[in-house]
Image (spheres, helix red, strand yellow):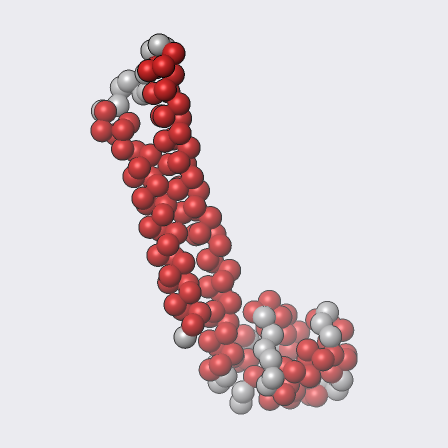
Length: 155
C-alpha cells in the first residue's frame, strides 16, 4: 500500500474528514487532499505527526512508497547539510582571521618598528602555515560537502 492510500485508509478508519485531519496536524485541507491523491508528499515532521496521531510506525507509513522514502532521505540530508557547511565555513574563516592577524602583526613589526612575537614556543612552520591549512581544510570540506549534497539531490 502506498502512502497516499495508507493515509486515506487511516483517516477514514477514524471517521475523519480531510478537514478534521488537517486541523489536527495544523495544515490546510488542500495539503491533505494532495497527499491522498499522490500529487504531493508531506515533510518528515508531518509524517512523524501522522505516525503519532494514527498510532502506527513511520516504517509502516513509508516502507511501500519508494518515492516518499527517497524524499524523506533527501529531507534528512537537507537538515544535516547546513550544520556541516557552517562548521567548514567557520574553519575557513578562522584561517582567514589568523592570516589577517599575522599580516597586521608583520606590518606593525616592519613599518612601525614594534617587536610583537607570534606564539614563541611553537615551531615556525606551525605558526606560519596554520592559517593556510585551516583555510584549505575549510574550503575543501565545504566544497566537497556542497558537491555531494547537490549530486545527491539531483538523483
